[in-house]
Image (tube, rainbow, N blue to C red):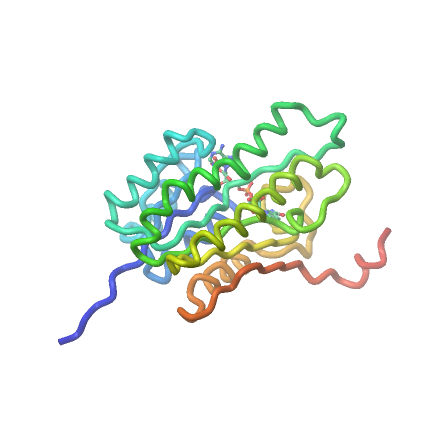
Length: 236
Ligand SMILES: NC(=O)c1ccc[n+]([C@@H]2O[C@H](COP(=O)([O-])OP(=O)(O)OC[C@H]3O[C@@H](n4cnc5c(N)ncnc54)[C@H](OP(=O)(O)O)[C@@H]3O)[C@@H](O)[C@H]2O)c1
């Protein structure tokens, strides 16, 4: 008798565009069921239409803890299990600290850090059942700070600490935690992406490789940067 492994299920935040959208597309192409969440309903619906057998959309604001709780409940209601959580939603306000507003600071902390905490908090009981995997999308800005990045870097450094604590807490439960730290990616995130910036689909491929690594291997922290053409390297 052949036994079929269950269809794996993922929750991807920030799924309406950019990297999150490409992660959903990569996962769904591989037959993984995905709950895609963000605020832009129409963009999420398009993703669901592209992969009607694998993607469901669940719009909402990730800074709202009620939304986070109900999106985790929805994954279980719709698919019966949760294997992968991809904390990808994020935004940046780049500004010197003295000019950064309190609301900009709060927005970055709420979307980039608190939402990841809340998503993990509600997802962990389900991930323990499947020996699942959390992938936190941090940034090179979570490994080295720079001028005008006081708020953004602080939120991403916070995510690194959250990841490290989760790694220790979840190790006894065989739940893996990985943190991806990309450099510049060609998305709407930056008003001025470089011509050589990473392609979102390439970064999404890395996320897929992380979640499909051999069962006895944890890919902990990955830092990736674009190859900068020599002409740009010499520019001051
Ligand atoms: N692009 C880069 O150069 C770069 C480099 C390193 C790391 N990263 C990180 O990679 C991740 C993805 O960035 P990206 O480049 O794909 O950015 P993006 O194209 O701007 O996409 C950001 C995503 O986050 C969602 N989002 C923002 N605020 C939200 C909220 N309040 N509630 C729910 N969803 C919200 C957006 O959806 P809605 O607007 O529809 O809500 C969108 O789907 C972020 O964590 C970012 O920090 C990006």
